Amino acid sequence: MWNSLLQTFKSYFRFSGKADRREFWIWAFMILAASFILLSILAVLAAIFGNSNNPVTSGIFSTIIIVLIGLFWPVMFFPTLTVSVRRLRDAGVSPWLLLIPAILCIVTFLVLFDRGLSNMDATPPSYPDAVAYTLTALTAITGVIFLVLFCKKSIDRTR
Image 1 (cartoon, rainbow, N blue to C red):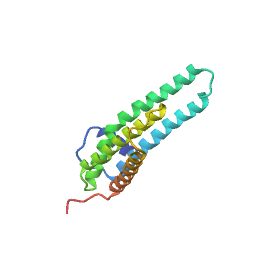
Image 2 (tube, helix red, strand yellow):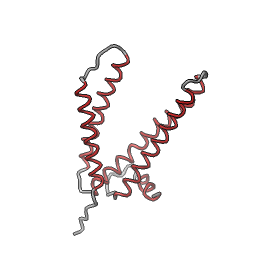
Image 3 (spheres, helix red, strand yellow):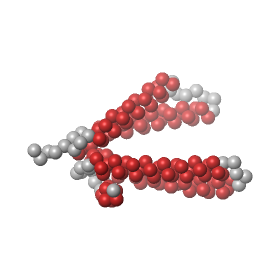
Image 4 (cartoon, helix red, strand yellow):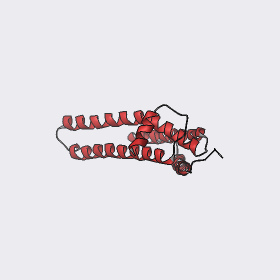
């Protein structure tokens, strides 16, 4: 397991080559577990210090965790992208297809962000509910399709 993680870190900016299923899924579960741990710590701190009379203490701990999360995800972006590209190539799928879920995620985020901001004041959202729900469902379906693609067996091109 550690060898797969080290291999992914060593290939931080290497898009060429291939990644087997094991390397990809160990990396994916490591990212998921680390994200879950960081967000759980943030939730616990929010629960403990949320009703605290000392906002300085709660602000310091929450700020530290938010900074850690803010540093963790951008640092892990490139190795996740490179291992995904190598995994798709190993499965015989064009890595350029990763643009589809990337664009969908960005558009869905922007639409949901707009809806969240509009709920903070009295302005109506720029997009109707149907657009937000359709984009969210389409992004989820695309994510499931890519999970299936990541699970495909490696193609042996030596024959």
